[in-house]
Amino acid sequence: MKIVHLMGYFVPELGYQEYYLAKKHKEMGHDVYVIASDMLYPFPNIETMLKEAGAKDASRKRKFGFSIVDGIKVYRLKCFFEYSDFILVNGLKQTLAKIKPDIVFAHESRQGLPALAAYYKSLFNYNLVVDQHDFYHKIPNHHWRKKLFRFLDYSLFRKFIVDYSLSNADRIIAVTKETKEFLIKTHKIEPKNISVIPLAVDTDFFKFDNKARIDLRKKFNIKETDIALIFSGTIVRRKNIELLLEALSEIKNENIKLLIVGSGDNLYMQELKNLSKKLGIEDKTIFTGFVRRNDVKYYFSAADIGVWPGNNSVSIMEAMACRLPITMVDLQLSHLVGYNNGLKFPQHNKEKLKEALEKLIGNKKLRVSMAKNSISTIKKHYSYDTIAKRFIDLAGD
Image (tube, rainbow, N blue to C red):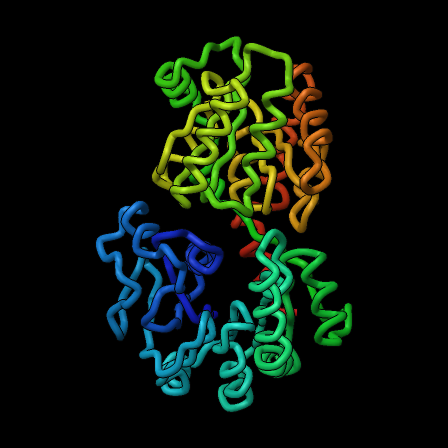
């Protein structure tokens, strides 16, 4: 089949869902195209992110036209309007006419292009599948002003565009049950018309590496008898890493190390370093700084327990694929520890986080059992091989 993945922003250097799905669909034997704008997503630190990922071009602007990226045929169309992360392009109609797709997977309905795909659907007679990743204006741990701005932005502007995309889609995908509930409540979509298909992990890439475990533990002076905790992600306040430091300082065990892997807000990073010193756990806490995305799996392999005290992240699934039991806050991705592979705790609750960590730290048999369950869970439910097939099956129903 001819398949188009349509999105406002295509950033293959950072390995998001759209890239992996297109890649897997090509591996399945389909004729796969990506259509996106000639701009990259407007992250505040996009240039730094691209440099750290090893990208040759660290600017937001990409060359207009056709190219092949990792075997995927990519059309980048000129942006003629952009507001925040809402973007429109010239030439979509002509590009769809040239490709003549059987299926269009339109990603992130709030970003604009899925509405154009919905408009052209009857003209080109393709099946349209639209997905929704988040609630946009209900992101936890953001300042109230940002929440208010997003609420008004969505309610007064984006909601109507999303309504149009969803009402004209043949199938709708939500990445979590909470996202599905959002679509039902806010957009009045019938529950039967929404399928929950989660984000996933590239299990060909993310897997346990024993050599890396030995080498990195030696590098950071982590003994084999030590229990290494790990947090990985962008170091920003909404990740609530200070809660983890405070909980760690109250755990009476000298054989604990904490790896904090990542870069981000330099001021916040310094505050965390000062806090670890103030709490008397400076010798237990290792700030690695920036680690290339391709190397994060080695750090997961070196650890014994993955911990996410704030906003949920796809990094949790990557850690699971690398044989880690998980401790995470009870938010939108907390179903990931519903397979006897980890523990969850209420948001901002230091005592419950401490209890969860103590339970895992004090029971090696439990850690080993949960680690095995993490791997089997990812392979069965959250690998891109599995998810890519589910997308095709849904579109063909």
